[in-house]
Image (cartoon, rainbow, N blue to C red):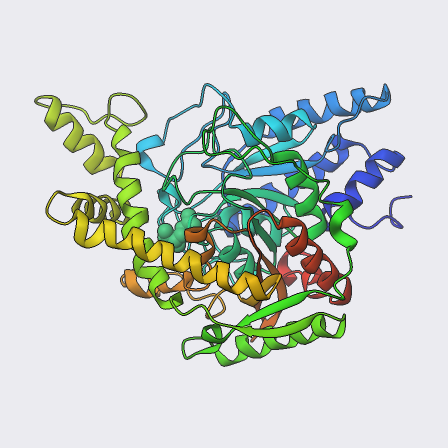
Amino acid sequence: MAGQQQALHTQSLAELAKGLSKGEFSSRELIETLLSRIEEHDRSLNAFISVTADQALAVADASDKARSKGEAGTLAGLPIVYKDIFCTKGVLTTCGSRILENFVSPYDATVVERLSSAGAVMLGKTNMDEFAMGSSSETSYFGPVRNPWDTVRSPGGSSGGSAAAVAARLTPAGTGTDTGGSIRQPAALTNTVGLKPTYGRVSRYGMVAFASSLDQAGVITRTAEDAAMLLSVMAGFDERDSTSVDHPVPDYVSGLTVSLKELKIGVVRQHFDAGLNEQCAARVKDALNVLEQQGASLIEVDLPNLDLSVPTYYVVAPAECSSNLSRFDGVRFGYRADGAKDLLDLYRRSRGDGFGAEVKRRIMTGTYVLSAGYYDAYYLKAQKVRQLISQDFKNAFEKVDVIAGPTTPTPTFPLGEKTDDPITMYLNDIYTIGANLAGLPGISVPCGFVDDLPVGLQLVGPHFAEETILACAHQYQQLTDWHQRCPEAYQ
Ligand code: GLN
């Protein structure tokens, strides 16, 4: 049997699920294979902050045993990695920060709880920009993540660890969070699929908060089918998250094959303005043509306030983060500085040592825009512009079912290239941030290469239209093989 069987690390979750249920291999064999790949390859990537090998093998054994008794959940014995922003009971949860360097969570996030109850096996926790603030996975206290397509380049961020691990075939799937693009952008830059669901579709309980009105949990996989499998388990109301929405959860997998014949795809005029790399534009246009050949129609739409999305986000997100991160005070969680003179000094030193430069920049900006004299001029104004941006999407969705375009303006960039220039770094998310401000679902799917570096096609739908964007992405993947390409050193 071995030899004929496709190597385990190259298989998708859906393929692995079939193999496990046919008894072609055990969960222990699968998990051992992936753990040894992590051991061999993570030195070159720094995708993991923790590897939970013993726990993973114990869960795999339990899963094999349960399966032999005919009791297997939908994800039984299948591997997953969690961005280190998800609380995992008894396991280090650092959020990429020194301030949480030693924080062991006493409970599981809802996402973790649901995936574990369905039988998923955690391989480890993945590296990320500190508190998910960044687009390159370089602001991590644990060092930068490297892109398997070229290890001197960034995998994108902030969920760069999960994206790099999936791209390098160290795991078929990982979770991420997306506040302004942190699932879709790294997916685009690593040739993986990244799904950010509708705001409120997946519980944020147990996810370390960055900007609560924007944060949403999702997944990074190699296929839209796998994203659908995971979303079916993760989604749904949770009374512990007051912003989670009580809306029925469809079986996303069975929705993958709905016909694209009548589908109206919006192509945003502003997406193809200056700023988009010409070769990326060409790959995206090729992808749009593939969808058109399936019977979908392409219709030009406008998002007139698109260029305001980045400045709006960089008022709203820092404002919310300055409030959320006030809980890290050296008393309640994580790192505490030694030798403080008094309470104020303890706060100052613990936060001064514990947070990195980007986090401090955001806290200062956020505190400023919320301060009495500037609240109206910045925060209130940003909230109004946020409404305009949401309205632009509503207007567009009166004419079309999905919006398709580039995920990022360029392919991946060398590590260090943008770290001294935060504004250039922020512009990476020009095409992704709008969906967060409007709470919409979005997916990035591999659509080709520029100079051997991956490019992503982004599909954004109306609220709760995950089925449509997943179907569109899945059928595109049936017609193309970009997602099957793997960086040479990780085959
Ligand atoms: N790159 C954006 C930021 O730095 C978005 C991050 C995210 O989605 N978590 O805030």
